[in-house]
Amino acid sequence: MVSRALFESGLAAIALLLLLAGCGGSSGPATTGSKGADRPESTGTAPGGPTTRAEEHAPVEAEIELSSPVVRPEGALPARYTCDGHNQPPPLRWKKVPAGTAELMLDVMKIAPVNGRLFVAWAVAGLKPSLRAIGAGKLPAGAVVGANSLGQASYDLCPPKGPSESYVAVLLALPHKLGLQTGFDGREARDRAIHEATFESSLIFSYQRK
Image (cartoon, one colour):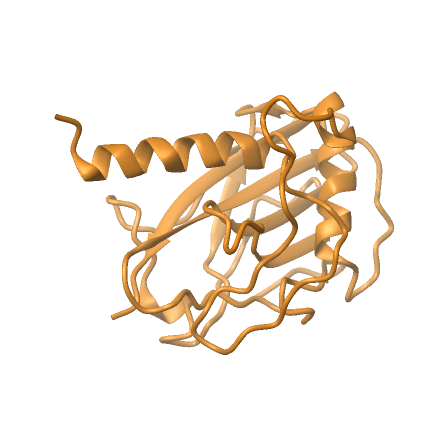
């Protein structure tokens, strides 16, 4: 018999593949919820449905190596990087940025949809290709933060209390600059970026509120 944990991890893997391929990114309005419950984002295209613009071109996975010194071996994110703590972005590191990259873009999203919609916790553009890390709650000069699924230009990771929730940080390498300004629409920018990016890397982590 397949264990529940194995079954759920399989579902998460399928959801992640769809997410990284660009499915689930439309520019429809997000629904604002109360603190402590993930807010939904755009619905995805069902398997076998029409091909989206993002599906026509998907960046090559790997190449860049994304990691975080605070994510525990089992993948858990410490509470200080959620609404149970300081609710600040965790430090991230990466290497092997491909030659020809003009800009890096970073998104933090829930893997599983909420009410059938994708949730973006954080969207950052304007990261220089020479950059190799960002500190906890800190962004370098030139970086711009887009609107998350709450419509706020900030980081927000606050899942509902209960079972552990899985998230993914995705770093995209772009061959040209997007020219985005602070408060840009995180969903629309992600759709555009994933269509144009050459390489990407992802880091999965989880958090459980009790």
